Image (cartoon, rainbow, N blue to C red; front, side):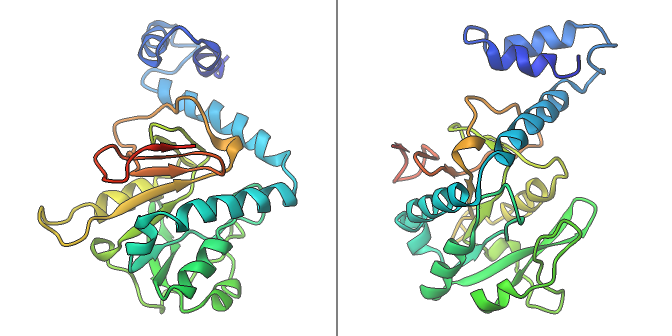
Length: 246
């Protein structure tokens, strides 16, 4: 079965990820397509996490979203940032970013939200208020998107970027929807001069049901600077405030 490599890895508490990867690489071509072992694991992981998310009711999602917001806004990164990229949530089965959005506007930050421009390509555009964000037109995925005539963010000047995910782990690895929008944008935003005044900080936010012990990743997957869940958070060890917070 195509999902068997991920299930074997997930259920094992003794074999490290690299050992399972070696087993996958040596398996028959009919079971796992050549060169697709990690992508097969990611596909299986996405199905499992989406199934868990569909079981959540609106109250639980709202409660967890508020808890994530409180953890984020108490952190110095949020206080220090002048510009922040905030994704606008899908209508169901996803952390709601509206509390973070409203807090950012209250604190006078410039808020930028994503718009899909083409295959694997997105840009962030400035949204003037939480009320206007709530009235934005919906994309084909039923996600609000700012129009192209709104001011476009320069990726090199963004201070903080909230990153959605299907799954995250406390090592700051992320599994997204598989289209590469955020990995490509983060790569662009990190191309700053060595002594730039401000570095981009990327923060993955998710519900408890999205936390995994270990998320499979590939060379093109960007490691995040932090991940925040309702009950736990982890930050890059080279940051002054780094720690895994209970």
